[in-house]
Length: 387
Image 1 (tube, rainbow, N blue to C red):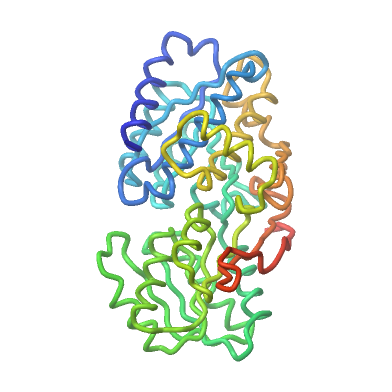
Image 2: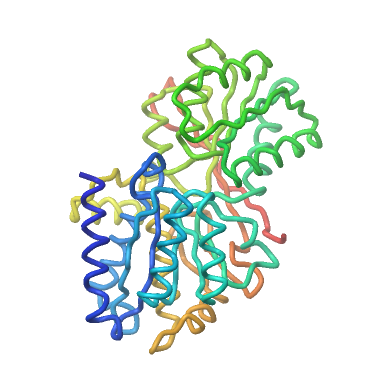
């Protein structure tokens, strides 16, 4: 049901573009709607679509609709490259969005560099190219980001640990995940920790037991994983099956809120930049109501990243004078300040040389067995984004 619903959206959007393209802001999206990574990325695309539908129902941007043209890449680089080329050369989009694995980034960046069309990462990890001094054409709204996440995570581990930290590390064998865990390994040494093992796990792995066994045998008391949720959670489950009782800390991907409740693991921590729906803010209630009204096929708790991406698209198009061009959209995005309404610890603010945000805020959650609920362990703490 999930696949067919989004496939229909993509077909309908593509069919609608030629007749009305001249009277709309055009935004191309390529995302992992199907395939092994779909659980992390398809809800992002669905939420983005839902948000833009609401914008259009309220009059659009500057009185013009925003038309999404959605393509599925199944997290395959060759498909992402083909999608990007079509969206740029046939559909003539003014903004391109990636919601897929980091392995799709390089071919897409090559295409937008040639076409001089801005690329927004929404749902896919923020690459270092968006940090100061940012690549001119790349922007990012996604919560998680290279280097800053490991600084926040290991700082929390250092402050929380009651004994010297023997650190195990786990990544997916994709460029940014592996690079971040390599960074964390070196950073941990400067913080008085001892990295004892690092496992780089292929994406299609059917059995995590061999990797979990190597980690357990190294005798860590903390394991840190920064990877797509499937790698994070299956590594943890593999360790628990081997009766490893240490502390595990992972990135709070969109699946994490429901997964904390499913696993009920008192020694699992998730660190993230999004507030969870248990906080019950007005914006959470807004998303829940919109998801219910649209009868979406994904849990509303997985829609934050796409919702924030929609906020960014709306803000960018409203700041782009009519008629739109890629150059006008690019100029508008240089100085955007996006009010996330509590979904983040503060606004997403872009400048001419910082296309990530000026401050990155973090929170830490875990499962509390006594309360039978997810609890906030550490409230918002921030890093100035300077490099």
